Length: 137
Image 1 (tube, rainbow, N blue to C red):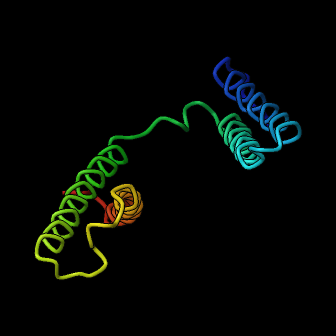
Image 2: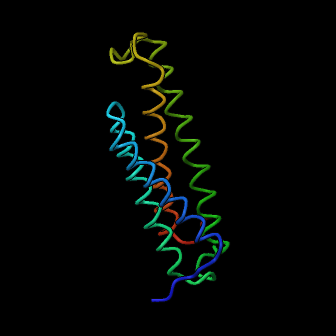
């Protein structure tokens, strides 16, 4: 298997290796934030694997065609509209106090994290749907 040795690939893999090294140093020497060191090590490993997989492909394979760009744009637009609709429904239920789970004591950050997760899954599902559907009209 032949790997590309562009300066971008080398720089990306080098940064990932530095992140792994920083994570190991934090994990071994700073007892109070072991979890942060573990997260850095894991992120660096994901970066190295991603860099190696991109380096194994020819450069012309990474160029997107117009259809995939259009599918991604349409999925993003639809996911935004879906998230906006869900937020409006949650706001309406909260104003009418029909749902006991949406009491004012609930943190805003919890709601935003849920919205991000819902929006990400909607985006992934719509990208898959529009990709399988064919020409997105």
